[in-house]
Structure formats: structure tokens, C-alpha cells
Image 1 (cartoon, rainbow, N blue to C red):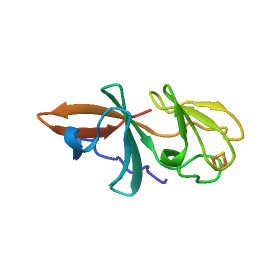
Image 2 (image 1 turned 60 degrees about the horizontal axis):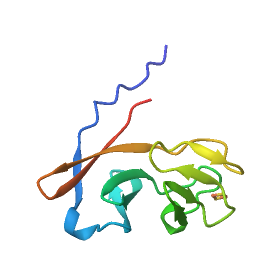
Image 3 (image 1 turned 30 degrees about the vertical axis):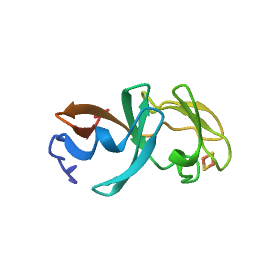
Length: 113
Ligand code: FES
């Protein structure tokens, strides 16, 4: 008899500006109840949750090689383009976000599914 809450469709939300996130840089922003790590890889922006699915490590503090981030706590790796987990000890993907540029604003939106 329980009904799942229907979450309204996510909207793009401005979180920072292109001036604040130059190529090679990353930052963490608060989006609702989530900490989101945003990366600028050679002018392309990617966003994932800043919380490792293994044991909550801060992913934005990890080493980034190409589009692969390594969790600084126990070394799990994730593809920042998709949030897919690549190596253990994490077993689950992290939430990823669509990113768009509106003027100078960097906007993110949670991906469904
Ligand atoms: S918290 Fe990220 S690998 Fe353990």
C-alpha cells in the first residue's frame, strides 16, 4: 500500500561560472543534499557526486588521470563522464550529472537512471 514518492523532474541549476573553473581544475559545490564534484577536463565539464560509494571518500580529492578519478581513501576508480565504477573496493556507480553552459554559468542536473 506504500506509494513511492514521485520526485519532480530535475532541472539544470547554476552552480558556478566558467571563470571559476579553468581547464585542469575541479571544485565541489552543494546541490540540494548532495556534494557534487565538477571537473574541467580540457574545456569539457563533468560532474559526479563527491562521495565514494565504498565508504564516503571525497572523490574530488583524488588523483585524476584522463577521465578516471581515484578515490583517495582506498583507491577505487570511477569514470567521471558516467559515474561508472571501474575498480574495487567500490562496487556501485556514483551519481553523475548532466552539465551545460548558459552564458558564463555552469549548470548541472541529476541524471535519471
Ligand atoms: S572510500 Fe573510496 S575506495 Fe574506500
